[in-house]
Image (cartoon, rainbow, N blue to C red):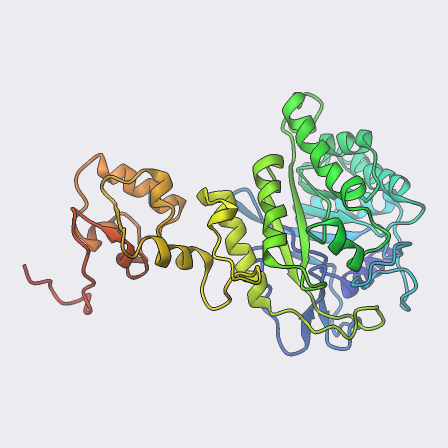
Length: 403
């Protein structure tokens, strides 16, 4: 029972950074707001009205599973300016030992309460010592308790390469938060962290190991994916700065996901008087990052303003299409997959459906697209040709089209 109380206290303080959530944007009511690390906090900051163990629905592969997000300790010796767990902040800290955490998660797993664990920690005694405790917890879970659920394990700033390699053997996903796009911006958020040596280099090690070694000693025969997160609006960074680093992470380090958290001020922190960032900016950054990861776009193709930001009033793919495709529409019967993915309203599944349908015949009408599962025809129609003609939208879908 004491351990459950500890987990409730941890969950009261945090829903940590986004991690495999069904939706990257939690639905909030008037009693809540999002902290910069992704934590959903009640107004008034840290006292929740209803205890929770921090269990949420998470997307793992093609399945949705219950996942607990928690920490070994909410105590931390680092003084990050934006963080509710920073050193010196006045609230009660909670700590679990590796054996205690592993046993509790194993009990939940066997009872069918959870099928996933996101495990992080505050830093006490340095990053190496803290990482050892995270690894001990994961090792006890996998070996002693035969835990076969999903494990998302945090890499602590300052962890050693051997620790990263061991974490890769135990986890399904690893993450270390860059928080800022470069060392200059990190200095304004977390002055005791080193951007390259402590944060970026472990992500580089993960990819180096994936590329040079085989996953013989991993728990499931596969290397884990890797992700990171940025605080958006905690300093005066531009979208160009964030997306420059994001593009590097996808193209060079094969990250599975980059998360973005719109800054929201936390009481009793150095940035408590800074204005909260518009959540729409966070959303535009997600859209742009998916264009890099899933649609083949380059950084140079993003519709940045002169100040280095994405437009808030229009998603970046639509903004690109208005500039490039309005007067040069794409013929859907001849376009390659890369071209199809640049059309608003066509995603990877839609592109695959179009390519498959073309092997059976010619696409002539928007109804042909709807019949193969491409639904958002109003969005794509200004930017495409079908049989050399611009398609017409039937204003009344129940009315037969005149031939």
